[in-house]
Image (cartoon, rainbow, N blue to C red):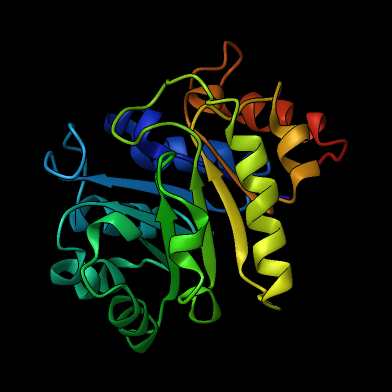
Length: 220
């Protein structure tokens, strides 16, 4: 399983150092949460900070667009260094077209669904995606508690991907920590996003990554 620390919870005055710290702890990807204050009730970062993160690491940048009309910004985030670019099914009028455009720009395409969005809504787009992101909190803020029903949804998502012959990554984002990451792995997740559990760890972010890795039974 891949661990993708979210820089949403980091100290942005030390962005490069914060990224390098989790990299030294064994992070696999760097997760970038983009919020616009419209699709979700928070405003975070944009292409400029994404470009700064790109300069700080060679790890894949996993950019999660929690924004309205994401098509307007796809090229800007790919140009900023996004390797994986995920949009929300709820925010896209023409989801298939958006996924195609991400791939045309040279990034891998992901689709995220909120806790109340049924998996069945993604059936027609699954053959075209590289990543399916199951939100295990309602998006907008870091530090929220994991919604327990998400584990069953992850399990159902794994079944959906397998039945359709998809090799897409299955990612989980929201309230993930060392206490629940094992059950997510057992449910079939292949990537977990962790923000406050990493950057809020009392012994530092590298220790936060290692604690999650240890909970998976594998050390970097």
